[in-house]
Amino acid sequence: MAITDRRDITSASVVISAMILFLCGIFLFTFSKQDSIDDHISSLIPVQNHINFCTIISELGIMGNSWILPPHKTGKECIMQFIPVSTYSGGTLQGDIFVSGEEGTGVLVQPTGQTLRSDLRKNARLVIPDSEEEVLQLIKETGEELLEIAETVNVQKTGEGFSIILDNYLLVDGCRRITTESPACCTLNPCAICSLFGMILTEGLNQAVMVERCRPDKKKNRVEILFTIS
Image (cartoon, rainbow, N blue to C red):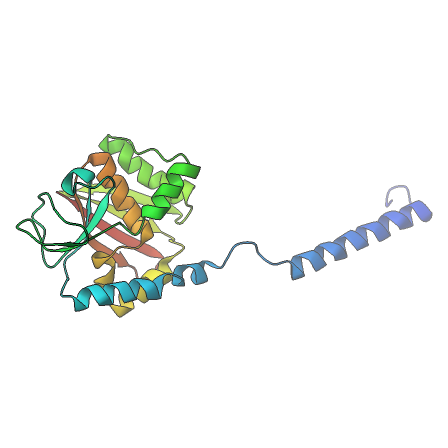
């Protein structure tokens, strides 16, 4: 239009149509609602239930770090989580919920991440490898690509355990709220994400895994998880 210097009705129609489309775009952008729930709100949904469970367990005198155990350690058909009164020797446990014996005394329950793991196996075809290198790579891919809960997931072997660092973790606000109540909550009963990573380690390596540490950064959106292998 600028080159040909046309000022007829065709040119006017083009200009008017462009203005209408531009205004419609602004209207749709302004009043459209986001499909996904806010990350801050999502992170707070399970917090109170998590704190309540840890409070009840603590009142029963159970204060040890949780263990994610393979089936051969419990005689169950699936991976289980054992919360000992104090320590766990690493042997085979016998019992249903309340376990007492030479190997350890505490509570035996299904891990918090059990439902998430089952869904990923069914709908995302999650397959746990049996080599250490592939297991660590799977944890990284699960956090970054499958669940998309962190910008980067760094997994490293450290002595007798494994360190997992979640950078720009979307659910970090929930972690901070839980640790404000008590830092022991995360090691006493790890959340679904930490539990899922522990279950991947347990199944892939076929070994018992203890939640040694789970610590959110106070300033950066980062969470550091440390698992010990037995």
